[in-house]
Each structure stands twice: as structure tokens, then as C-alpha cells.
Amino acid sequence: MKSSEIRQQFLDFFESKQHKIVPSAPIVNKDDPTLMFINAGMNQFKDYFLGNKTPDNPRISDTQKCLRVSGKQNDLEEVGIDSYHHTMFEMLGNWSFGDYFKKEAIAWAWELLIDVFKIDKANVYVTVFEGDKSDGLEADMEAVEFWKEWIEEDKILYFDRKDNFWEMGETGPCGPCTEIHVDIRSEAEKAKVPGKDLVNMDHPQVIEIWNLVFIEFNRKADGSLENLPKKNIDTGMGFERLCMVLQGKTSNYDTDVFIPFIKFLEKESGKKYTFDYAHTAKSDIAMRVVADHLRAVAFAITDGQLPSNNGAGYVIRRILRRAVRYYYSFLEVRNPLLHKMLPLLASEFELVFPELKNQLEMVTKVIHGEEQAFLNTLEKGINRFNAIDTSSGAISGKDAFELFDTFGFPIDLTRLMASENGVKVDDKGFDTALAEQQNRGRADAQKSVGDWTELTADPSVEFVGFDHLSVDDAAVVKYRTVKIKKKDQFQIVLNKTPFYAESGGQHGDTGLMFFGEEKVPVLDTQKENDL
Ligand code: GLY
Image (cartoon, rainbow, N blue to C red; front, top):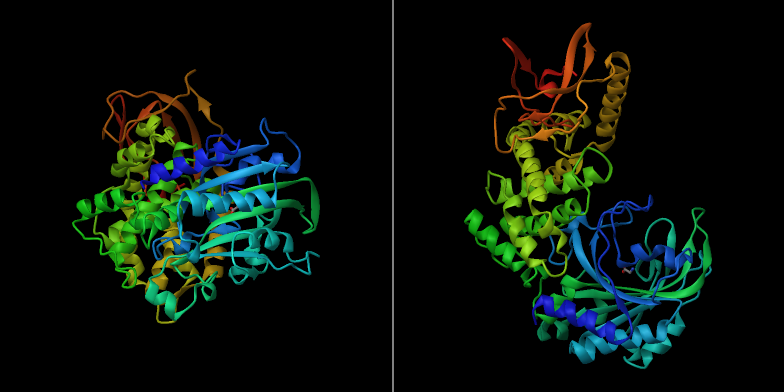
């Protein structure tokens, strides 16, 4: 079954159970200060659980774009190394807002997996919440009773709050959950070690596919739980993992969700994907990282989060730079690559998330610009990295800061490269160097920057640097004076410019401006250390 059919069958199944099918919310979360990105299907329904809003229909189902790269749910370090973690993934979900509860949620999950998708029930295990003294909660014996109708008792396993009490963040709706795990190992392996011994043991082929959460509580900022006005259901099934199971594969990356991108990368790099997960060839890891990160970056930008130097924008920039470093170092691709994969991505998702196709030109420009800017400094940064004295077993905070400040290496990229060489990074030293720079920046800014003088009524600015290295006529939109070491310099904003100006570790473009006969140098402010 093709992945598009699997997705559709899930939605059709819940539509047949009177669920309203709704679109995915944008992956970028602008409404909730406790969460940067959507990390679960239930996020867009938070107010329904809390009783602040009432849905038109008490049963809803959808496929939701999710990103788990920050906060409580963060899978970034695993991505590419293993065969089943992702930054962006799709979560198939069904919800009940004060309507059906444990009995139906369990019965329907079983019906869909076993009767509709025909998963062999011999390979299925379920887990339930064993209770937690600190929260004053008993084991979920109600869920156990409902499960006993479908599955042998010895395949119902008990786990603690880490695995079986689901929370969207530090605060918010939460509750005990029951998870469905599938053992997709060979019969020979199953004969050696029973699947039940491998559940929740990070085995790549004994994996959780579906989590049914019984949302009954709100976790408050003081850590206490309060009862919600109604009992609710919130389920989340990993679409890519489900495709792996139903397509008879042992890696998400071997399904038709990812294979078109792996093939694209093989062609671009001239390297072969070996499908050898035990050997973990670096070029295989790189292809998985790039195929994964492309989706995260493209959909985040599509949904309104441009890469930047802080907050959610910096998370996207870090993911993008991680991908660039992987294709540069391990696929030996030296030119921007991610943006070339966007037409394929847009067409693969055209029917389910058409928003990428609708904004393809903008997303392509942004990603291309970001890739080029980082590639401009990457090689020098790698050379600098290789020259660092690591005889102490660690990269000093000062060196890590230089990589960050001059070459645009996010600290987690430096950490990743350090770990590849078996050394650590002095994170504290890095934080100190960063704080010092920020303090200097603040002090400088207070001392020396004047107010903007606006010269035109129209403040719009056109960047033409992707296509042109010069512009014949441009007008000054606004300018301000910056006093550095008692010398006046000017920051000028033009209505049309080929100069890519970037802060936070990138080298800005340099060149010349002509005002009549007068030639004015445009400085790389990072390099000159002028501003
Ligand atoms: N909200 C259920 C899950 O993310 O697993």
C-alpha cells in the first residue's frame, strides 16, 4: 500500500466513526508561548481540552505536521543515526472532546490496525500506566480491562510516567496513556528474544506506533495536576513508522515517504545508499539527515518561520546548517542542494499539504540564500575546527565561540563534530563568551547608534542578490550614523540591493556604492569588526 493510501485509509476510518476531518495546523506555533513548534496533533486543540473553547464537532481526526526539535520533545540528536526518528513527522490522530473515552479509543485502534491494516496481532504489545506516587495516581486498570478484550494479558505491559504519562510541555493538558508497539524483527530474532523484553528499550524494530492518551488533567506551573472539566481522548500515530510496518520495511527511510529523496541524493552526490543500518555508513547517515531536515526546514518556512538568529528562527537555521554540513562533509556536495529538492517535496505533498507548492518560489529563495551564506564560511570553519588543539580532550569555550561568531557554526553543530572526533565542548565557556559578546554589543549599541532618518515614503526593500551582483540605480530609503571609536560610519538601507547582509556569524557581502562620482566602500562588518 502506498503511503498516500495509508494516510487516506486512516482518515476514512475515523470519518466512518463520525469524526470531522480537519487540516493540519501550521507547524509554527504563534499562539502558544509555551511551545515554539507544534510537537503533537493535540496542540491545536489545547483550548478544547482546557474547556476554554468548544469544538463544532466533539470528534475530530487529522494528520498533523509536527516538529520535535526543542523543549520536552526533542529528537534531533537521533535523526539520521537511527532509522525511525525525525525532526518533522506526520502524526495521525483522533480526538474526543468530552465524548467517547478509553473503551472506544482502544477498540477502534485495534480494529484499524488488525482488521483494516491487517497487522499480525502476534506482533503487537501494549503498554499501560503503572501509576505514580508523587502525582497521587493509581495504575490504569481501567485501560487494562478494556485491552483484555483484544489481547492476551501477558502482552499488556506496565510502565512508569516517563513512558506512559503524556504531557505536551511543562504545563498544559496531560494524562495517562496506553501505547501500541509492534515487533517487526525476523522470526529467527523473535525466537531468540521475546518481543515483550524489547518494548521501550530503543530497539529499532520493536517500536511504538500509536499512543492513546487519556487527557484528564491540566499540569499547572507549580507542578500540580488539576482535573479538566471533561475526560478527553488524544491519540497520535507516527505516520512514517506506520508506513514502515505496513510496507514491510525495517526503516522509515526505506518507505516511499523517503525513497524518492534518497534517490535524488544518490544522483546528485554520485554515492550509493547502502541500506546497511548496522554499518551506518556516513554517506547513508547524511542522506537520511538531508532527507529529514529538508522537510522540517521547508515546512517551517512555508508556515511562516523564517530562519533567523534567535528563538524559533534560530532553531530552523540550526537544522538547515546541520543538513548543509552533512551534505558538504559526507556527500561531498559543495553547492547548495536542499533548495533543489523542493519541487520534489512540493509535489510529493501536493495533495495533503498544498501550502508548500503554493509558496515554492519564496521558500526556494530563502533556503538557497541560507545554504549559500553558510557554505561561504563552512570550509574555512571546518579548517579552523580541524586546527583546534584538542589535546585536553575538549574544545574550549573560546574556540567554540569563534566557530559560532566568525563561521556561523551553531554550538550543537560544533558539539556534533567534536563527538565525531571523540572530544567534548566546554559549553559553560561558550556560554560565558556569548554572554560577554552580548554585553559588549549592548554597551556599544547604547553608545553609538543614532536614529534612522527616513528619506522615502515607501519603505519597501528588494533584495536582488540571488540573480544580480550589481544594481544600476538604487535609492537610499533610510540611513543612520554609527559612531565607532570616535569615527562616524553610516548604515544605509537601499530600496534595491544585491548585498546579502547577515549577522550572527556570517560574512556580509562587500563591494562599492557610487553616489555620483563618489565611491563608497561597503564593509563586511563582521570581518572588519566595525559595527
Ligand atoms: N499526544 C499524543 C502523542 O503525541 O503521543
